Structures are given as structure tokens and as C-alpha cells.
Image (spheres, rainbow, N blue to C red):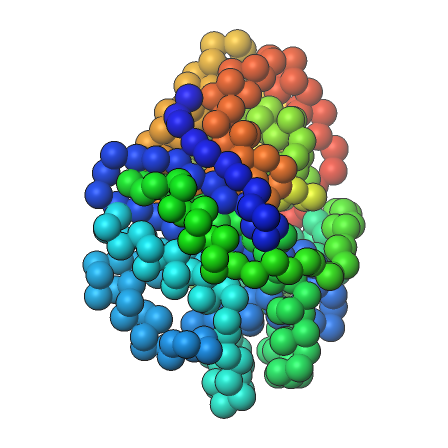
Length: 397
């Protein structure tokens, strides 16, 4: 097991650190708040706040924020998910203090300038249009709508109508309630000193307490179809509920995913592309958090072949009831190997550590191999009993 450190500071902040003997460090300042905590009237507000953080703080303008990382050879970015909003950078390890300072400045001191506020609304509306116009992105949003009721089932970015109505006071109020030290995780992976990281974090982050309500995702299943002009291919997505990150059964589903749809050796790739030539690509993925989990399998094909592809997916899920032990062992080795390859990148390890801590405990990140190896044959076979699912087609008009 890799060496790692975890400490809850007096100000409420959680600090995670994994040392590496490489001249690079990855740093993220993350808050345990995202799209899952929004309602139908403010859906998209956490994503909007993420954008606004880069428009300037009380001590730095937009250019200075970027310059202090990029001119040191680093990269700076952020993302909003259902349960976390994370601001991260990766840079030479000798500049680790700059990484912590910039990440903390973004997450603690946004200016929320009025002119930038209105301008950024237009940027996000264009982003929403971009995702709408990309059929693959669009159907992945639609399958979530058909697996969860509103507000959870709505897009993380919200809608143009909601974004237009957001006001500065509303955004600042939610920011002050959610962006608190006891809801934050500072994660560092690379060549740094844990004591110095904690000392800096104690100094930089003020002691504040969370004051927001949480929402429980409500599951259901449905199917739908839309017609769209200007596309030549039907975009099909098949989805079903899976365990959350806080559920030990998640590892069973990961093994199933490796067998069913992960890579060119997977059952669906072999049956749908290689044997029948029905698609260029078929791919599945999980989206899991502390309180939710679902799987989505995507295929682009001819309209008249959608039914056949759906029948193959259902058949292969049913065939899990006959899966052999040797197949399970191959999938375990595949998953453990893929995890090691992914964690060669310090930012990948950083993000996984933070995500596991936000969902429950960072220890899950380091126990991954043990948990995958503990998956039993019968547990995977039981997934063959799946009865409820959702599907969506975006078809040429």
C-alpha cells in the first residue's frame, strides 16, 4: 500500500497527502457541494459558481490567477460534479506553495464582480448549447433524466432559462453557506512536506461551518425518443441503477462492467461491433457518488438496428448468470492493472483520493485492490437478474 497522510485541522478542513519522489505536484481544493444539492429553480448554480471563481478574487484578477500557475509551467482547471466542486492545478513541486495559495484563493475569496457575473451567464448558455448540439453528450444527459426524478435528474449545467434568472445575491448566499472549511478537502500528491502543507492550510482557511440542506436522489425508470434534423446516426443509450460509492457492492458492478463493456475485449464490443458490425464504438461507464450510482451504455448505429443492439445488451446481462470464475479473475486483473496505470498520473491519484474521501473515506482508494479481489462469483452472477432499466434514442429526422 502506498504511503499517505490524512488530518482534520482545527479549522475543520480535511487534508490528504500522498508523497511521491517526482518533481511534480498535484493540488486540489474541493468542496463537498455540487449539482445534487440544488433544486429545480437553481439547478446549475454550483457549476455557475465554479465559472465565476476564475473571474477574479479579492487579491487577484483573472489574468493573475492564470499567470501564477501557467508561468511556472503548471496547468489550472476545475470541474463540477453531482456532489463535489473541485479546483485543481498541477505544477513543478518546487512551486507547491503557489499551488496551495492559488487553489485556496479561488475557493475562499471570489470577487463575484457584477459585470463579470452577467457576462459569464452568456458563456454558460453557450456551453449548454454546445452540449445540446453534441448528440453523444446530449443522450448521456437524457439517460440521467430517465433514471432520476427532478431535480437530481436535471443537467449539471442547468438550463438557459434558469441561468438567466440567477442573481448575484442568490449566488453569494449559497457560496457562503456551502463553501465552508468543514466541507472542504485539500489534496496534495507529489514531492512536498505534509507538515508544511498543514501549516499553510491552517493559516489560509478560516474556520467556517456548513449551512445548506441536502437532497436525496429519487430513482425511477423510463424510456424516450427524440428526432433531430442534421444527424445521420441514431444515438442510443441504455442505463440502469448501480450501487453508490458508499456501497461495497460497487466493486461487484465494476467487475461486471469490465466483463460487459470495458474495452475491445469486452462482451458487448465483441458481439456488437466485431461479430455484427453494428457500431463503430460501444462504450459503458459508471457515474457514482456517495448517494447515487448508475451505469450508461452508449452506441451509435442505424435506426433499424437499435432494437437488435438493445436485445444483445439484455442477453449479455442475462448471460452474467453463467459467467465463469476465470472470466471474473481476468476482470479483476484488468481493473487492478488499469487503476495502476491511471495512478501513474499524480492528478489522477489526487482526484480519486478526494472523491473517496468526499463519499466516505480516502481509505477506499488505498483498499481498491483488496476490495476488487474480494468480489465473489455469485455476486456478479446475481446482476443477471436485472429487471429495471431505462433507454433513450436520438434519431435522425
